[in-house]
Length: 81
Image 1: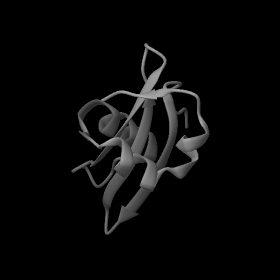
Image 2: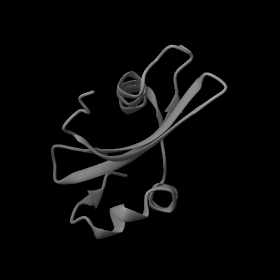
Image 3: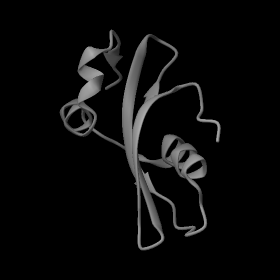
């Protein structure tokens, strides 16, 4: 499986054939944003789900993103608001 290079970190779950992810994505302006979402395809693999959430997920506020992905406190990027 190849994870997209602009994905900094993520959390992935598959519960009852419903894939869900939280994805931190690096932007082009020395920044990042965190998105949450899922895939309605029960056969979607982890890579497919991460890419779908990256493209179509709901953007979280900075505080929410850091709550789910606390390791982002250690990176030297601005949050894309």
